[in-house]
Image (tube, rainbow over all chains, first blue to last red; front, side):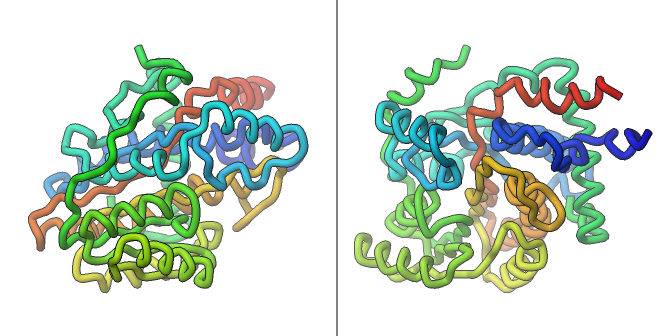
Length: 155
Length: 181
């Protein structure tokens, strides 16, 4: 059995047979939250801990942006309707980015929604989530090191 | 407890008034949508350099024209980067090392593919939103730190996240594949 090659989140996500694309975007964003949280912890432990860079995450909400440009058919119609009813304009959504760019130290490693700090919830806050966060970090650093050896020196 | 989607979507977001005077800002994915509107805000709010990091130089230039006209500024630049091409990302970051200062990086570029395609040998959404994004983040960190030391202004690296991270199907999809070994 070649399953040992699949004993990896990123490998599993690169399987072209029966790929679960319906929630791929969501998965990519969850991986981002995991990685940033872990990265912030690692920076704090490392040689650059005193050279502050505030890293935060912002949720723009549902916006009339080009993100769903690749959707087709029913899915495309669904997004169109949802955005018509609930969507923010791109300008209003972009205010969340400006809020992140202006946010203070307390936003470091944190998630913001509606231009305010918000607690994360769901899998991330569970023990299983914490374990997964470690795995995501180790795997992704491994991938980045393969792309650019030595890159983790920047942490 | 976080407010639900409806409450969130109808929460009024404050119009940005804070100054970015003298600051240099990079925004990826900024020829359209959120990134574009963020670039317009940064220009209006006094940034001295706003770099639109985009795949298409010509569409970036169109965006700059629009921003210059609406804000009466002339602070935008278009730099090429393709977040699905790792060499392009590292080239971009090398170029950024030459900046006098770097105060804000908005990592906003992202894609949502409904079908399995690959870039750099990886599924495209993961390649762009995760691997490419953090390849860029780690390569810009030294430049951001240098800027912070030089100017005394703590730089910000802002990641465009999404509430959809809460989706539990990641648990199901990826973990099922582990459990089925």
